[in-house]
Image (cartoon, rainbow, N blue to C red):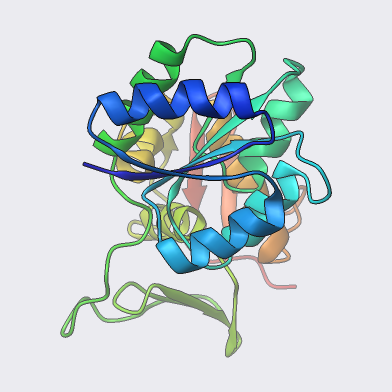
Length: 233
């Protein structure tokens, strides 16, 4: 079964959730603050991270932002606040799912099971994989899981890379949000809004002006496409 790391500073909640996860056969580790949690992610390489937003010192949003620089483990965020802005921020830094407190431990276990059924973010590079693809001044290397722009490496998360690669596979072809959920997330049960969040992240990292996009274009009311010939600056 999976190795699950819980990063939360509420001992009763941690104990309760841990007991439910262990009953399912999972290995469970715990950390009471963000810095310790980051250390354990680096050393233990968990499959799933259950991460509280409201942590002492380094909050869960910053923890998620940092861990996404070195791991593609699933991240399930916990919060006591239900506002839409919290969900948007959590998704924008790389969270995979979101649960609002108070919640049923059975619901959390079900969410973890659902995450484990989904494809992992970054497949291992295979020797002799597909050749790099050029999209104007971008080079998309699926074998190395890298994107360079005018020779400079663009620091994309695994999911951002998959989204760009999916769109660039057939430049000009329009993909609906449900189609992109299928191709990139492997599951249409995700909120379609997550596609918009990741497109915004891609545009920011590629310096792609949303008003005059060169790489990822919005087709209003339908979805997104990669430009056949990105616009000159």
